[in-house]
Length: 411
Image (cartoon, rainbow, N blue to C red; front, side):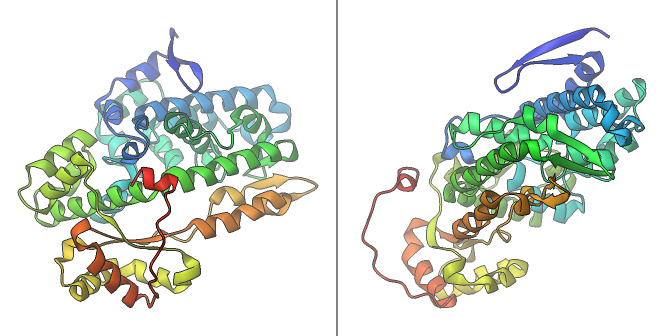
């Protein structure tokens, strides 16, 4: 097959063949050029404009490297050499994000609620579009590719598990485009020390330091980027606006799931109600502010009980504040944990990474201490909402001496 290359800022030259080029050129893959990998994080880090398309190419490249390494070391991995799924996993890596909606995770929960499909359930895309035709043409089964993307095959662990090529690429890529450089992602060492053992993807002890580096990167990105309060506020605002568009039948769920960032913002701007107001706020970076922003040390673990009915909680605080319900948005992230810490290590027997590394075990405490629940409101209603939220959660509010921090720069 004829080969071509693309120059990527993370991995250098990425090689691809005629079949992959055909997949690149489908509308389903090209849509990913118009979906930002980090949603609204460019409101904090102006360089964070990279897309799901770039990430998909990077994941494909790392899958190809893994395949090459496994074939070279075939004497030690009979499970893989007896199974032809590794050729399929390269294709699955390229296509693994075609189910993502606009602004990535900002709309993920809404799409799953309205369509009953998670972003990695892409069977309908592979069977109903030209993507499936191309797969058939080159001898690949859309059904098998869909199972790999959904993480339902043993070999798909390299694409979807505790330490996988998806995380290796997006961490390295996100760090590059945001400029956050703490930690490292030594993906070549990780790929060379990953192997299948008893149908499990495991990392041998020679790469524990590389795994620690990846965990440091993930921890720092969580604190600095993924859970930055501006990112959480803007994504929460977008999600609320989209919910109103769906509830008012301004957009249909299937149409919503197939939109890109540009189409969604256009639909929001055209709305004459709440969604239109939120679009203007996002366009002007006139965001809601933090009326309450506290961690588990203040709120306690009982705060997670509210995750199942945040709408009711928002309404109660709005009523107590005497403001419109749309003026209160609450963000309660899931329990702080990183799946990477559960990676399996072969070190005198199989064990979890947390048992093989005291350093990684300590990172668990960092995750907990940096978790925050946010109650957000427009600036003009901040004082009333702040008091009502503090009363609801029985938090004593004290006057604070103003200290300027790095976060204030991006307020």
